[in-house]
Amino acid sequence: MILAGIPVILSVLIFKGNPLIPFSVAVLGTSILISRKEGEPQEWMASTWGFAKQILPLLGMGVLVAGILLGSPEGAQGIIPTRWISSLVGGNSVFSNFFASVVGAFMYFATLTEVPILQGLIANGMGKGPALALLLAGPALSLPNMLVIRSVMGTQKTVVYVSLVVVMATITGLIFGSLF
Image 1: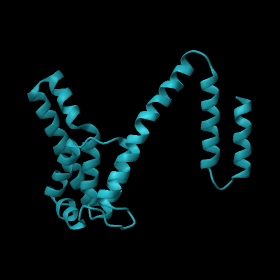
Image 2: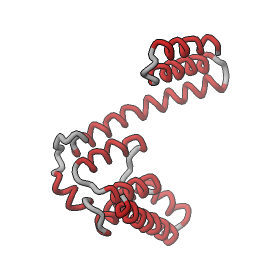
Image 3: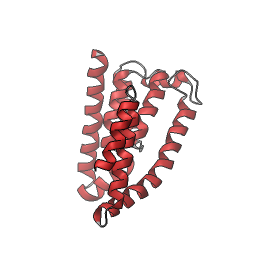
């Protein structure tokens, strides 16, 4: 541990204004230490690396597609016209919050892609209330999630659960949009 700590301390002293560099050095040093231990730590690192190789290309493609469809947060126009987004989820109406909740409920996107997708939507006219409604409904539901819940709990309970998530996300988006 001391051998891994020395480069971290040196990077803190050298790069005082940039905490990302010492953090990266610490993560790298810890990863090297863990991967050298036999048994469970080595298996854990191998699994982590395997998941990273599976997820990172999909994450990169998701962000790329979001950028092409929605444009950049700095204002570059994407394929989807701004007027479509602002007409559906602009402002803070009941419809825009409900629409964002329903779309969020049926979307299936990785947690890390939510931020660039929402940045693109907000830059194209999405209101803050609908953005929150999408963020609340998205992680709680997805089409595959609904199918699994239905197989375990049945159709009626799944409909109630999905309805409650959509309604509560809509109400929360309305409240948030009216306050901020």
